[in-house]
Length: 148
Length: 187
Image (spheres, chains in turn orange, green):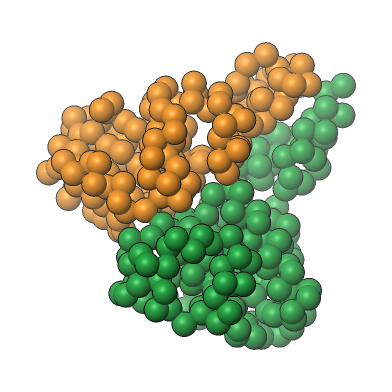
């Protein structure tokens, strides 16, 4: 298992946690310093109240302490904060790999009920209009290309 | 105004606050008090296969739907945590159902969430509650004051950023409208 992973899901239940028995499950509020005693952590819908910057900061702390982490979430925006992505449906893996590569399976993801992160979806539509030629995750960069 | 007055005026209101599903998670799904169960399950796209499952073992989206069905007969239906429980397709479907419940069955609906995106297309007024008191209200998803209390949706963040010096884009909440607007702006 990679160091940093997001699991995005359709019809997922806590049964999925049985696949990650060596991970410490975090479901609700937590104190960061208490996490540092665990070598592997799985967040189960526990980060949805945090801003992206706060999640990035949390991940940096975990990385710096050599802690592997998985974030199970329904918030598609959170997938961009890890390098790896696993998509589950009905507790079964549908597709996995490098996050941006997995997100390129737009049709598959939409068919099972998922959306794409805003900047990825925006870039893909702009590509259809020949306004950009790749996916931009940074709005400043995208602005520079569109209104140059 | 009191919350009741907002409900009478708008039918559906959005509330920024914390919410946990109140469904008792002990027991089996089939033991829940849901009237006209077959029809109710069909209405929210719930599979009858879950009837024999323990409530604690079912998925968050199904838990949300069951929570909704246990309240569906009430005049005022309070639901929450859509952003945590539902994927895009289900959220869109349930938003349409909420509008149907208000327009055809004269229900009042309170949607509680911390993610404003959940309110797009269904809610005309957003209230911020602290200690059961209304501390702020707005009918504008681009109201900066609102985002002192909750996360800003990515589409709002993007348009605000692009418009920071010069207004280039309309303040929309739909990505298709945004794409058309960008096309007009850069062409």
